[in-house]
Length: 130
Image (cartoon, rainbow, N blue to C red; front, side):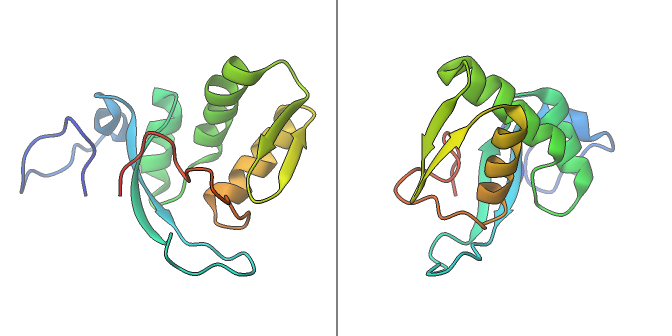
């Protein structure tokens, strides 16, 4: 699966990961839930918009289908702090988490992205498609 805005079928991806992010910072993330009670129905690849070009590019460069640390930091800074800040910020997944600072945000969102926190009814990756 290629990000939105890339060239058509059969085209080789650009050598520079940043070029994969030119039209909307889309990144294909592999999600595998590992929390107790995970059904597997949420597992699989998602097309995810990462809030920053640097976070998107570093996620592609990571090469393992996971958001990079820069991608998660961008998600906290641009996607959560700017919309719901200042700290403390309450986020509700299957359980409620109180984020006291950016480090808390990075830890929680990393666990969500890696399938370790049950997202409950919250969308796994807002703005993404599967």
